[in-house]
Length: 152
Picture 1 (tube, one colour):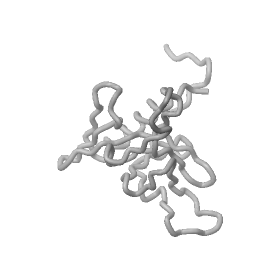
Picture 2: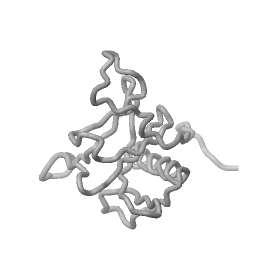
Picture 3: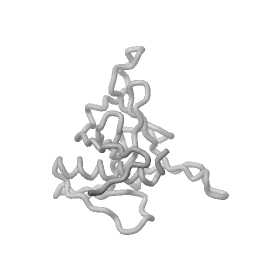
Picture 4: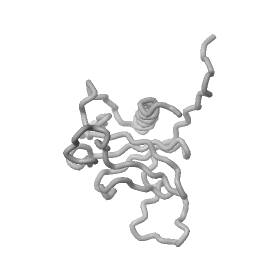
């Protein structure tokens, strides 16, 4: 199992590549205490972006829209949303290789959100967010095999 920090770093890297490829200037905040991972600049305005790793589940890219604080001793809340702290989620899903730029107002800020890559089994279309509407690029990051070494 890969360390969660390594997974997050891969997600942020994939998001940065896709965002730059579609024309954004991408900046990284200094330090580890910001509630956002990136700042994007379209030469008109700046926007804060929180990167999330999506998992392909039952025809949808599923990603968390809150941070968990349950592992802290005596947290004020077990989860905190990003309302007022970010404008976008950049979601990288290794299962689809897709990077999705999702405005925060397009998701319900409960615990997780879903972007549909396949039609739902019951044919529901109301309140369904098609992943294709948010996809800004594809990034393939080869998985290194455990114990493999790189070098010349």
